[in-house]
Length: 125
Image (cartoon, rainbow, N blue to C red):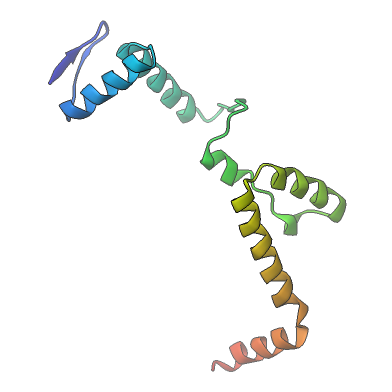
């Protein structure tokens, strides 16, 4: 299907998806062209190496990039950053994080077991 806009025409590969897109935009009170312009603007901004997203709304990708690494921080800063990070988690996410932290603690508490494991690795068994 060929679609004409004020700037240029373009081809839609899947007419059913385009119709669904148009329907969704109508429900949101937007015209299809407005939404396409928003998508184009966002794509151009994200491609710009100098672009910084100052939006308070973070995507999952942004959140993953900002997850703190406690092993790279000194102790006073680590506690404040971790508390702030944990406050952003849902209960289920917090329980998973707690389980991982406990597993790390249990593994690192037994120094003899770690030394034995290191010897096993070094011996190639």
